[in-house]
Length: 75
Image (cartoon, rainbow, N blue to C red; front, side, top):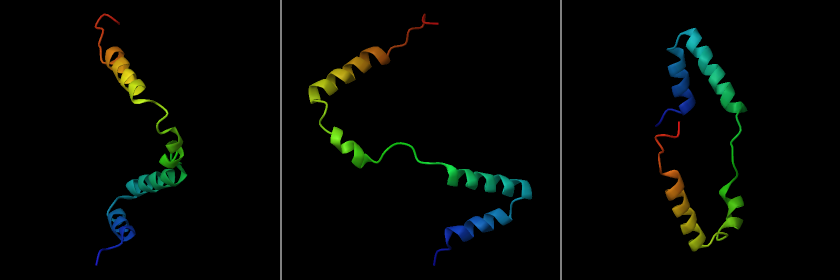
């Protein structure tokens, strides 16, 4: 049977010196405070089909023409 992940983490932590254990604690606290960014894909479904295939092609071409070029004299 697989060892639960929390047990594996504790086992690894016990092998670390105190200062690294403190770093891990701070990191885990930061994870609990962080919030996911963006929106669920289900909220974006209403935009499906809003851009026609022709418009999408025009956008791709504009990006290809304008963004994939390097101007060595720009700086």
